[in-house]
Length: 81
Image (cartoon, rainbow, N blue to C red; front, side, top):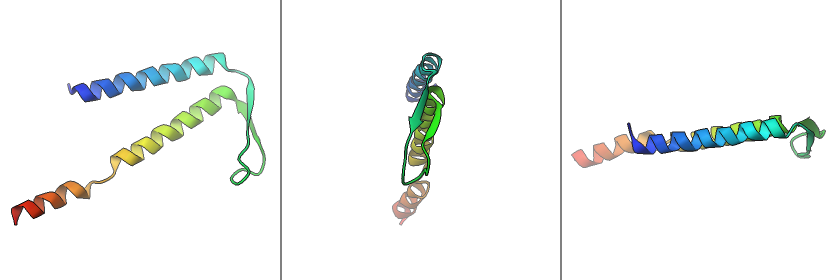
């Protein structure tokens, strides 16, 4: 198994366990206000807000690191000439 993959998996599990702890201990309602995007303030339990922000962060990180498939194939074409 790749050591880099194992390290990333352990970090992800640690962050997810922190998310679970935050969700268990923060049950009060919080208010989110984003006037340009949301016309009214959103009132949700804090655990849902934490989960939503974490999910958006994971998706953003995945999209940023997953791109660039053309870069590897164009390098091989230049080396053959």
